View 1 (cartoon, rainbow, N blue to C red):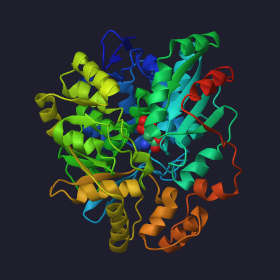
View 2 (view 1 turned 30 degrees about the vertical axis):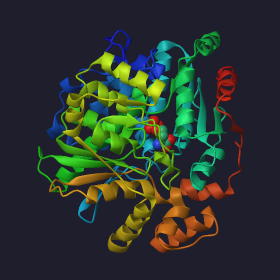
View 3 (view 1 turned 90 degrees about the horizontal axis):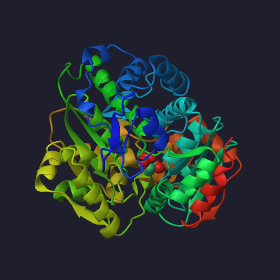
Length: 490
Ligand SMILES: N[C@@H](CCOP(=O)(O)O)C(=O)O
């Protein structure tokens, strides 16, 4: 099978899709990309007629060509047949003049579930072909960690270790992770922020001593973050499916463009949309919505990416990120697939904390992407305003995307990606609605009563669950955790 994937930094580092998924990141620290993704020929007429599951299979067959049709069929059905509370998987709703793509009906109430119910299937299938075991390392700012553990819990031949920033996730996100059951999971708070966790995980992937030890245990080290192409590609499907729903609802005619507003920190979700665009989805513009950690807004406006700034803890913690990993993939495509340029920008980021792209690359990016940011105060205002006018409660991340979408004066329909359930951020959402609560449980109940909407079962049951993981470790101690984990994969 052809090695169609290659590192953003060096075309010689190439792999099949199964190998790319097993490796997580390329051995040179770059991210796997498929340079010819824009040659994929998808039939939009077929897509608007098919179910979500049929579309997932249709699209993944094109982008993961070394999986057999039967393998992908099994993976997709195992992931989506029973795990989502909506039979549409990711329904689109009209909210005011905008559209909202609800991505939070999965087992942990965040958009990550769409990919992290499928990645364990893809990973297990690839591991079987390779005859190996795997230890998955995951950095999380709140949502990915829980969704990854839920997806990989008790999966044979796979272990998972999750690292999140101590006291920098919402109370409910903390409870979701700290109560996680499973004989193959480990979750640790780290002293630091998400960027510290993510950088250390990336370092560990490149650590030769660790790889040596992994080999001794016959274990591969890999990732459940969106740096892994297997985490990213399932997210392409919901962009096509949202388009399908707009056509079916008569909002657009087939072939007409739509725009997307995507709240993002690590740039994975919006990059999946760009992949959909490269595969033929008619998109006019992507609005990249940030919180006060507005490193992406500044980059999109100036071409300078500069992480040397204050890290701000916000009420949208999943987006409290200053090193936005997947931007590297966008730079690869927008620079004309110039591996050397990408490698030198990433070297600058590593050594100086900043890089500046050339005018041509910036121009190409700006032709399709805009960036804007929203403060905590504005986020709360938006939650309140949308609730009062439309009776819909948005979570803080979605509110950021919604506000950025509503600031444009485009006549093209804009779909905001609703990335999480508001109940995951119950205290701040209730506060935005000018109500008080004594703690996160009181907030959950009051929010539910106020909105006359049931609390998702997976969140409601957290209150009675025991805390199983309470370790707080330093960034340096992460390596020990991983070394130990290698011997525990069964
Ligand atoms: N927002 C994420 C951060 C990690 O991003 P990912 O898309 O690379 O998994 C989170 O909630 O953990």
